[in-house]
Length: 245
Image (cartoon, rainbow, N blue to C red; front, side, top):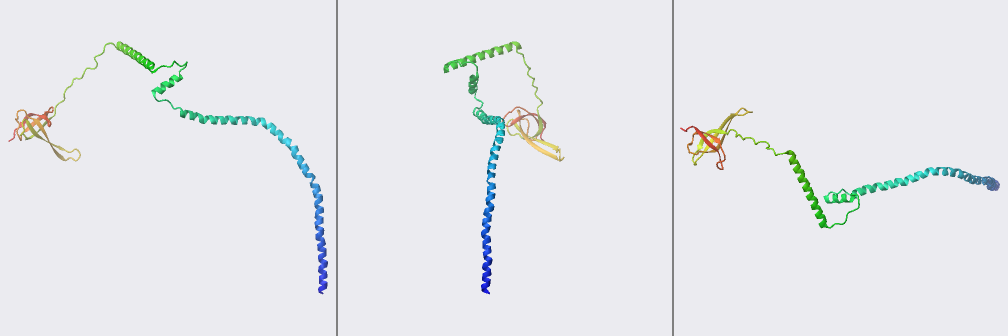
């Protein structure tokens, strides 16, 4: 039984091997005609780009004139961009002159005509002095003509008459008369407060001049303001209102 099974297995394996050997041969045969058919195709593909190349080159030739102006505009724009930064730089490098000497020098450089001869410092100083003398003379003539046009000088506004105002007069009580020709007067002011309506009493002292020493301590006197008679005296005795008892 075992021998029969082995024979059957060998018989089955042989046809499989023959089939496998035949399969690669059939694949090679199938590939050969396909390759033969495919080989002419690359030639056709090679021909088509050659034919399309002129078609592509023709539009390029037509577009070329249109691209040239753009190429010309680009350098012009680049030149403008290059000039634009240089102008502010030049303005920044050349500030306006501030000193009078620099301004005169700039005016001389901008003056039309050929430059004058070289002058020494003494020549320039003499010319400057001559210009100043001529300017002074022209100013003098102009002022004289204005004075002649105005005529005789007017009197102007007359000074206002000064009328002294009324002098201040105060009444008080003599509290000290010991000094010679000097009395101390106490001034008492009693008035009602404007906001709180409370009676407010204030006292101030001043020194007055008494030429005849007629006022005594306790007298009620009147004093009037005067020119400064000493370091503290700005008042003078006017009269004695009431004698002390």
